[in-house]
Length: 433
Image 1 (tube, rainbow, N blue to C red):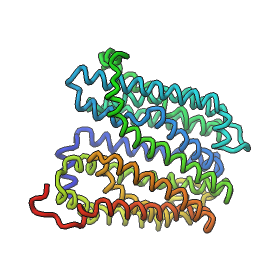
Image 2: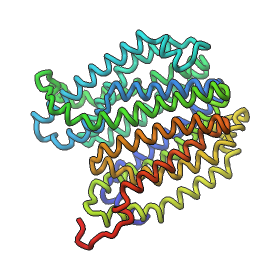
Image 3: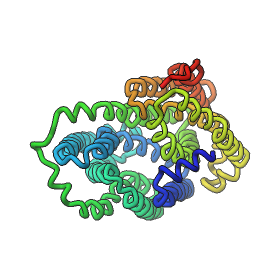
Image 4: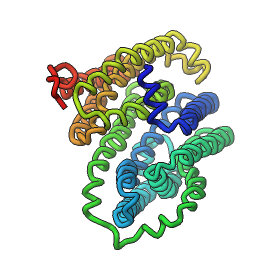
């Protein structure tokens, strides 16, 4: 733990550390208030419908940006002093994203009824929401493009400030829409809130107007498309396949157990997301850049086991406290109507604990550019989650989906341990580098 704190103090930008903490805290508070409003004004049925739209919108957002964010950040960081390569990076990314965004927007707009049937069944008519989403997606994509440029140029402070302002603005719009229009308002807020941040980002990017002149058709480079390829493949798996599988599982729960049960499952997933933000922040701030620096197995093993020895027990204790306080948490985050969610806590918390243990090691896939390992293991996790969810829901009802979450991550963890077995458990020669 001391080593982690020392590293963050020395390597992570301390002057923006408080802003990062504020960003995470803002996200949690925004999520809490949004969930509370949904629980009060809409109920479990609305929670399920909103969950489906959120998952679908996530996949659409990923498709629109085709996973270019991390690639743009990486290449701008490398080539920001080389005007030609910088222009090739920005131009190629911009036009790839432009065509992908236009394509997905048109597909959603002109197939709104089919999307509505997939997400909400023929019992609901929210096709107009899908059309609003199609119109909002280009603004989201542009925002993420601007974000990636600022991130690549290490403009962390303005990036975090924009995130905080955007979260607060999105929260205000969301709560107002839910209060005034109930389920319709909540669904509209899902598709427009992420795009509203573009209005703020635009102010930040206008201060770097010279970058606009770097975007040129003639500087599109097909070699850069190849370089972006691994990032796109990774995004397709984690950002498109997983949300679509989540929709399929939620729809299966609706069919087998009813809309309210799907709403309870969605509520549990939301609570899980909030407490995992803290751990994910530590992992992103420390372990991902740390793994990038590490060049030998001995150091890698030391970092992993240090986490398991010092941080994992604290996280596990925190999960135990959450489990013991689940009635209070439901009363605070939701309403008394969501009492059945209590039955889902145990398996969800166990699954999240194993998830953190496994994802920590899997970060090395990204740090060491082990793209195919990442893609294959993520696909394994996606398929395991889907098929075990169907199996356990048939046997145990809605809690089966949470059981499947645990079982899937245990299997994923085993695969990860096998891949890194020599680094974690093998004999390492003293001269190993």
